[in-house]
Every structure is written in structure tokens, then in C-alpha cells.
Picture 1 (spheres, rainbow, N blue to C red):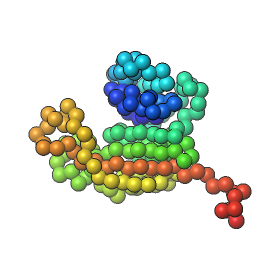
Picture 2 (cartoon, one colour; picture 1 turned 90 degrees about the vertical axis):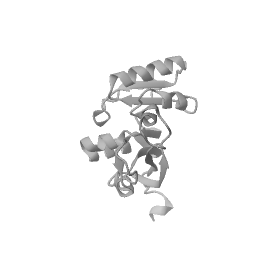
Picture 3 (cartoon, one colour; picture 1 turned 180 degrees about the horizontal axis):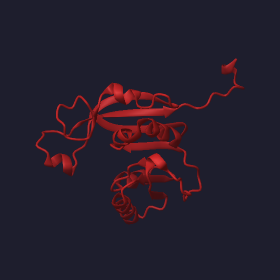
Picture 4 (cartoon, rainbow, N blue to C red; picture 1 turned 45 degrees about the horizontal axis):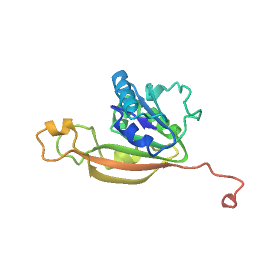
Length: 181
């Protein structure tokens, strides 16, 4: 599942590595571009939805499965959603992950000295983003985004800093297990 699917390049990549891929974006043009990229790639295991991730209607998925995923990818979308409703955004991401599922979240980094996009978050803000949900942070590391056309047009020698964080949804405790005794 990709939140904020943009032009579809990540969906095209993921469709070769996953049994089913879902991309969600609120921008109709992004959904159209993603759909075109997937058609060019002849992808058959991918679905794209034009939806507000904070108010999902959860249409029927072409694979027939539930809206719970083993892997959720967010590249520079969460920091926008948290400005609208941080608690709801965190809850939605936790809902989208199956128990044991992972979220890969790429956000801006407050250690980037220049205001140049994406929105810069501190490591503490990233690590606290899913407090109160079943998601726990396995890692949070600084990195540099790859060059994009937008970054190349900026007068900087390298792309902006980001945070790469990996989150895992805790499985519910089995009260019948020996661990519960």
C-alpha cells in the first residue's frame, strides 16, 4: 500500500515484488498519472484510488482482501497529513498495517539547514508520531533524498536531509499463550 502515490513510479516498482499493491492519493491528476504508468508497465496486481486517506471509504479491492497490509510506504505524505489531523493520521496508518506489518516512512529532517521542502521534522517528532497506536519504531535514521527534478532546480549541492523510519504494528497479545501466565 502506498500513501500519496504521486506519479506511480513506486507502484510500478512494488508490483514486481508484491502480490497486490494499492496506491491512494487525494489528487486526481496523481491518480491519473499513476494509472497511466501502471498501464505502460502492464501491471495487473495494482489498484489506484482517489481518496482522502483521513476519510477512507475503503472501496472493494481487486484482490478481494481487506484494507490491512503487510507493508505501507509513505514518501513525504505523512508530514502533510499530520498538519491536518495528527491523531487521525497516526490512527489511519496503524489501521492500514496488519498485525506484524511494517510502515516505511520517509520525511524531512529538521537538521537540514535550509527551508527547501519537504517539511522538516525533528527526530523526536518522528519518533513520537505514532504514540498511542499499535505502531512502534524499529529504526529512525538520517539520510539524503535522491535527486529529483525539483531538487535539481534548487541552488544546493545535494538533495535535502530526511528521516527514514521503520515502524512495526504489534500483534495482539494472545491471552492463551504461556507468555500471558
